[in-house]
Image 1 (spheres, rainbow, N blue to C red):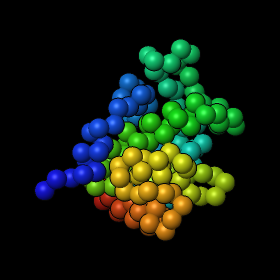
Image 2: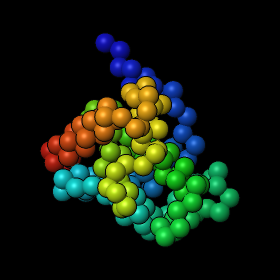
Image 3: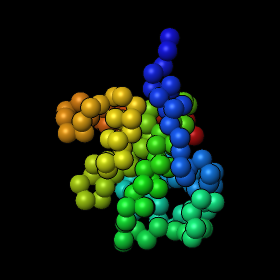
Image 4: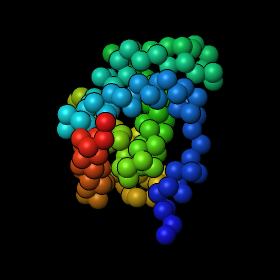
Length: 149
């Protein structure tokens, strides 16, 4: 049986995340902690104090100023979260980035829905299907992290 999601992930070229395994590991630990607690984690709490050391970024290593999110920071985190979701999908069949949300409204950002579009799962983030997929992956992530240390 062909796994279209796994195939779609294989077609994605990562700009940043595959170049900094230490940052990936730290972000995965923070997401897993939230998952074991059956909670969500905000983007700011996820990246606070994480040093990103990327050979393709001029001012590296660097940390993100969580009080001043710019377009580059959003793109960077979206790349890392997509990559991390690819890894969690391969391990457990869920998108771990579903647990990462905005502190303003408790929902995932445009990057999460963009990933769903890239994977061919939705055509618009503004529909019930997108919300249902997000809720399903939150549930799957909580269940997986609760049973896998």
